[in-house]
Figure 1: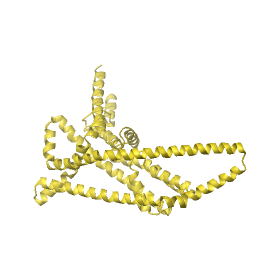
Figure 2: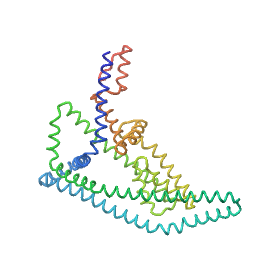
Figure 3: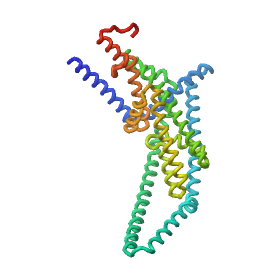
Figure 4: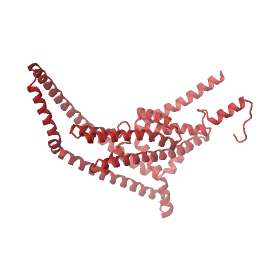
Length: 376
């Protein structure tokens, strides 16, 4: 009876913790995102700020202002240059669409209609009537699709335009908050830490140290995976004699980090369009390259990420899949890190959730009548 009561208490305790984490990720993090992001950026800049203030003998608040300005100036310049490059590429692509259609699509459609016309000349009149009816229905459906696509595009553009003011406000709040938090980082964190008692404070510091370290390990792991994907793409596209292979491989490798979409979000449509244009060998090459990259990634991702954060590849794969389904990109990183944190807290004896191998061996030796060895 006592064991059941203890189990129920522990179960409710961890259920409350999981519910609080779920609420924080699902609601609080979304509502307070500008301030959470500002706190994270201030934490990253904490050591450079202290280093500059110590070496140059300038006030720490002034060093914080300079570092935040340098950080946002660098990020802003990069985003502006990348946006200009992307806009230029999109404009050039739109301008080339008529010539692309005339050179590639038009001959394919002309041959298709010629073959269809020759086949229909020898067909029965009833079949011709049926084909005419199906063709009219197809054209009507196509017009409906184009109309709906146009309305959807206009709605999407309208939604993006309407969300820009709020996005600008959030970005402004994040930048301003970063300045204030960076200038008074020790004061603010010290106040928060004083609100915690001894046990809660020790747990928080332990969790903070482990999560921050594991997060950077996770980022390093995905950077390694992205580098491997980039090299595979670059070598494959170079062998296929694709123009701008380096730039295309880099863009697809960055896009591959996104859950669900990944490499297939670009490679599959590319292969399909290439096949429609009549270049079947290139379409098969692209599809084969996509399959190869997908197989390699599914093999190395759980092993690299799992080995870095101390989880079995199967456990890592399951936690990543569940995290993506529930929280998207946040869950992709958050679930493996959270599970790794629970394992760490269990190993250090902070919480008791899983039975460790050493505990099982000790229990078996005691049941068999053998004393435990010294130091175990």
